[in-house]
Each structure stands twice: as C-alpha cells, then as structure tokens.
Image (cartoon, rainbow, N blue to C red; front, side, top):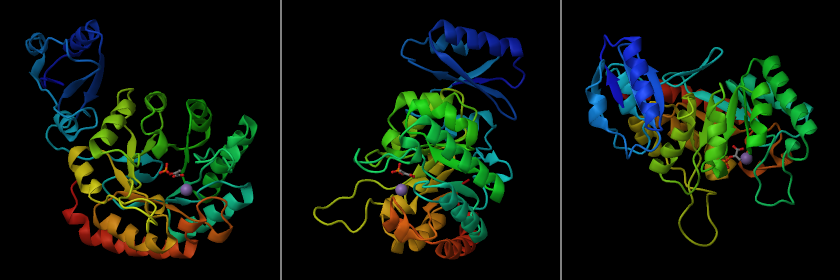
Length: 355
Ligand code: PEP
Ligand code: MN
C-alpha cells in the first residue's frame, strides 16, 4: 500500500493511481479521516516499489505481508490514522459491527408466502433484526427441493418479492443466498444483503460479481477452509470496491469416524482471531455448525461471549414441518430466550471485545 502524506494533493493521488495502472494493476483508494491510502490489487511481483516511494505526495510504501490485504486491519488502520476502528455496516437503522449483536433469523428455505410472513412476524416479536430465508438452496442432491427459486426465474422473482414485502411489513432488512452469478442482479433488486454460501466461498467469479454491487455481502466460510483462506477470498469482494462484507463462521469439517454428534465443528476461536486480523464484522451461524436445535442456545451464548457481532439462526414456527434443516431449526420462543441471554452476555463482555 502507498500511504500518502497528509498534505498530498488530488493530483499526487491521481499520479500514483495512473502509475499503478501502467503496471497492469488496479488501485484501491481508501480516503481515511487523516490521509489517503492506496492499495494495489493484482500481481505485484513486477511493481517497482522504490520508484513509488519517491513520487510526490507519497509518505511511505508499506508491504502488507498477509495474502488478504484490503480487508486487513493493517490497511484499515493506515487509512484511519492508527485508530484501527472496526467497520460498521449500516442497513437502515441496523448497524452491524461495534455494537449490539445483530440477530439474523428465519427459515432455512422460503417455502411459500404465508410461511415467510408468519416467521417474519414471529422473529420480529422475538427481537431479531434481520430476516433470512433461502430462495436458491445449495443441496447435496439434485433430487431434493432446490428452493422456490431453484426451478425458474419467475418463481425466483416471486419469492424475492415475498422477502422484500415481508421485510417491509415487519421492519426487517432481508438477506438471501445467491448461488450463482445469474442470481446476483435479480436478488440485488429485492434484498438488502447478498449471501454467499459456504460451498461458494471459493467461487472467484461470484465473489467478483457481488463485489461490483452496491450491497452488503454476507460471506460464509467454507467448511474446509482455514482462516487465512477465508479472509483471502473475502479480498476478492473488496478488490472490486465493495468492503461492506460481513464474515460468517458456520462450522468446519469435524474430525473422527462414525456417527458424528454435531454436523460440523464450530470454530469459535475464529471470532477473536478474525477481529484481530481484519476490520470486518464477524457473525456466527450456530444452526449449520451444530445441526442440532438443542445446541443453539449454548452456542449462541458462547459466540457472543467470544465477541461475535451477530448470529444467523434458522427459525420456523413449526420446525418439524420445515422442508429443509428442521433438525437444527428452533421456534420463535426459543429465539426470544436466546436474544435475551445474548444481550446480557454482550453487556458483560463488551469492554473486553477487540474493536
Ligand atoms: C444457509 O445459510 O442457508 C446455508 C445453506 O448455509 P451454508 O452455506 O453455511 O451451508
Ligand atoms: Mn439450512
């Protein structure tokens, strides 16, 4: 990154950007409160860093050693003049990061309008902030329900309208997963947050596509990805200019043979680690990580104690009836108890949470 002097002129900044482009790279311009920092995006192996260091307006050229650069705390700190503040993502009057834990709740899969509206009303009453619901479902078998949007574009658009309308009706921003590049433009018309599912964390083209949108992105960690890999792929979104990224830990592949007790292994230490490494908010999904409704309460409490900025929880008014993931789905009443407990825990741990 090129750290510009406090008194660098616009012309100085433009000159550096032009020079970066000459070398075939893109410039990521971060105008902080105190100074401008220009990050390099692309293959930097042939960049003559020494030449940049002596350009007018350039204070210092600093090499960020991690493979994720644009979302790194080091980069954010440079732009913000050492305050190192974490990012808050604002969606209407909901603020994700640096404050009250934000609870995203709703069905695994949107099934029909009535189901969605009933759940939206119930989670709002329980104290949730954001409505979730899958319209394009990633499924292990082509023979199972692919989500209402899985069949054709018309049904997908219809379901997206239900989401938008349910959100409006109950005052809840909405989030849905985009499974493929084709879904992005359509979904972005109706939802407030675009979710990239675990299986797509490695899909560079999809990440680049949502990175070009002016919408917050919820990126779920792949169940086989290390933390460094997870953050590196988040940089593909940031590299397109979109830094409104909410990271989500949703469990990694469990060890051991035979009958597993949990669907995945919830990596709670990822929360404080990621908070040290990046300025982005991180939330926990206790539903997919455990696969068990009887563990959602304890893992939600643990996540907030670990400093998570929020939770994503699968909720249905009748979990037994849910077409997808009923075993890990809780009732609105249980959600309410979790939210109450999490508020208390948050008020206790807040001073110790890295921000
Ligand atoms: C989901 O949140 O709907 C989902 C499918 O989760 P994941 O991508 O983490 O498996
Ligand atoms: Mn699910």
